[in-house]
Length: 379
Image 1 (cartoon, helix red, strand yellow):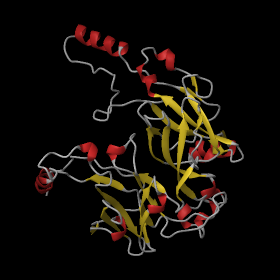
Image 2 (cartoon, rainbow, N blue to C red):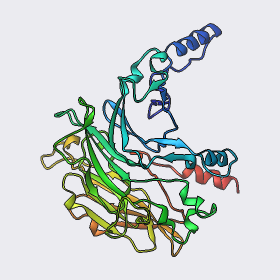
Image 3 (cartoon, rainbow, N blue to C red):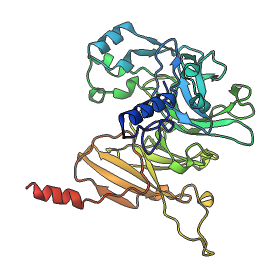
Image 4 (cartoon, one colour):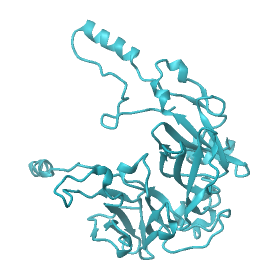
C-alpha cells in the first residue's frame, strides 16, 4: 500500500478532520469523513518486495522492484523471533532484469477506493514497469522530470548483488561487526544515473544507461531539500576513505565508509572527496542552506538564481579509537570547498554510535529555558 501524507500534520492531505459539537453534528462529520476519506492504492506482487527507499518526481513515485522469493527456513526463524523478516527474502541474482516501477501520483486523485485496490504492478496499464539490468539498491539520491524531453532522470546507489541473511548465517548468528572479515559477504556499490524514456516505457537511447558517477563505494546520498524532485548538479554521499579498484560483480570487495564526497553529476571528473582518519566513520550527510540577503544591487536575491551548492554540510563522525562522536560542518560552496576540510568540529558530550539517516528542519529552533526550569523544580 502507498499513503500520501501532509508533511506538516502527518495526516492524509485529503482527509477532513472531525469537528466537535452536538451528536448530530458529529454524526454528519463522521459521514463526511467516510465520504471524503482518502484512497489508498494497494498493489499486488507474486512475492514480498525488498524495499528500503523510493523517490518522487512531479508526477510519479519511483520504485526499484527485484525478482524475489521467500526462503521457508529463514521465514520460520523470523516467525520465531530468531532473525529479521527481511533476511528471509531471497533476491534472484541470476534474473536478467530489475524493474523500475513508476506509480502515477494521480492515483491519489481517484475518488473510488475500488479503482486503486489490488493493482497488478506489471499488468495494469496505469503503471510503468521498465526493465533494466539486474541490480539492487538501498538508497536513491534524487529524481526529476526533464520538461524538454519528457524523460525521467534519477540517481541511485547500485549494488549488483544482495543477501541480507549472509551477514549472520555464515557466522552462526554473530553480529556482523564482530566478524573477522565482515565485508567478505558485502557486494560493492557505485553511484549511477539512469534516464527513462517514459512515452516508450524503456531506457533512453543516446546516453550511457546507467552513467557511472562514482565508484568510491558510495552510500547515503544526500542533496539540499530544495532540489528534491528538481534538476540537480551535485550529490553528497558518504564514501570509502580512498580510491579503490573493485570487481562489482563479486562480494568481498566492499569496505567501511571513511570519507564524504561532492559528486558532480554532469562532470564526474570534477568530483571532490574528503577523507577522515582510518578510525573515523561518517554517517549520512545533511545539507543546510545558507541564509542569503540582498544581492549587489540592493535587491532581494531570487531563490531560483541561488547557487545550488550554497549550503553547509553537517555530518556526524564516529571515532572508533577514542569512542567519541564529532559533529562536523563543511562549507561546500564553490569548487574545492569540500576538500578544504570542516569549518567547525565539535565533540558531542556523549558517545553516539554509528548513524544511518538524518534530516535538516529549516527554521526550527529550540528554547531550552522551560526544560531548565522543569529540571530545577524537580531537584
